[in-house]
Amino acid sequence: MIELRPFNSLGHAQHGWLNARHHFSFAEYHDPQRVNWGTLRVWNDDEIAAHSGFPPHPHHDMEIITYVREGAITHRDNLGNQGRTEAGDVQVMSAGTGIAHSEYNLEDVTTKIFQIWIIPNQVGTAPSWGAKPFPKGERAGQFVVLASGHDTDAEALPIRADARLVAATLAAGQSAEYPLGRLRKGYLVAAKGLIEVNGISAGERDGVAISGEEVVRVTALEDSEVILVDVA
Image (tube, rainbow, N blue to C red; front, side, top):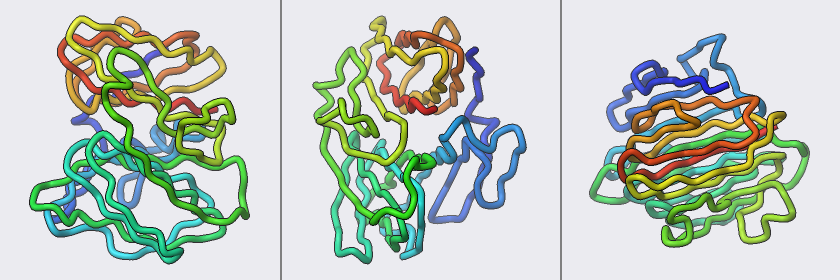
């Protein structure tokens, strides 16, 4: 099953410094049909104005992945971690027993991110944070694992969940396949471009909810950048 969730159907919040679209129920946006997709709980499409951001706030028992689409985000937390994650790269925070963090756009341009929350398969563990650059050349024409809870994905950032985040950059006319499996759920968004997912057309920043599909085949109708989360 492929369910298209057009960008203009997503929840919307405009806070001045933050322009947010919510793929799932979040904060003041609630849709009983879009609370989660398997263990995927949140996918926020955030545009953060220059020299603004999220002040320190706490989380616990959640895997929080930030994929930077444009610009850069600067992280600080109460564990002493700090770092700047640029476009195309990923940071992961395992909130565990509790962590307080801030995420600021210290750049002179708007920063655009996907913030993705996945329900962990471990609770009561120590919090942690990590970030990693992933050269886009590695994902040209194929899906590459960026974050994973599977031991076999040694190069990926670790998360405490039965899940993967993968990405691909596709030139117009190129296709890439991901072996999802019929018992898994996938959620896919084109950060850029126009694509077909198993024959269903999806535009830039549309959500594509996938279930019961052995293989996900993505074809780029124009140059595209694709993010897919694979969850139980």
